[in-house]
Length: 195
Picture 1 (tube, rainbow, N blue to C red):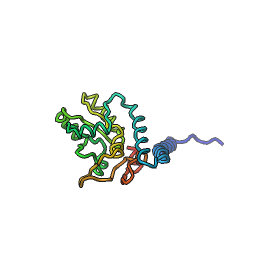
Picture 2: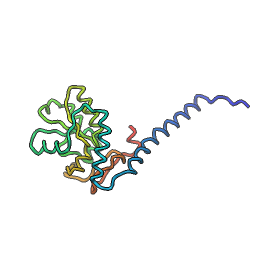
Picture 3: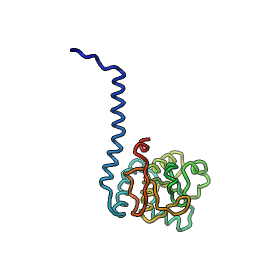
Picture 4: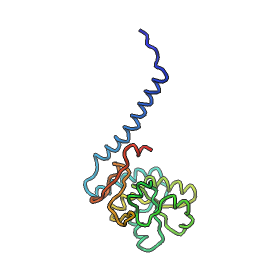
């Protein structure tokens, strides 16, 4: 018996199903791999944060980078410093670095901060590294906070919400659920991280 070739509709349905399974399965598998190796103590978490950041940094090696210690020393010396949070608004509503502004505010008025050390950050400073790269292409120098918000709090820095100092932090996804002990972490659902 000779069977008829599959119709375009059947091929399309099969391809769509395969692509959906691939797209949905990969992020979950990646998160599970990192989650299985989540360190037990804060020192190990900080080591992992820096290891992950160093891997991400390969995508933007040419940009300025600043450590948490250097950024805190600059702020403590009362030198003009501006923190720019490049995360999404849902993440920022949970907490931000004290005095930070969002990237939209910075872009709209970056000339105002010419005499400031501008430090950009996100959860682990991957997205902020890409943002710094875009700013550099426009002739605007900003420094990426090495290890991001996670390094900041793991090294003892405070974060705030609308009411003041908080121990709640949005870590984007399970892969980056590396906040210090005593912190409440919030993540996006897995499907939100796809887009």
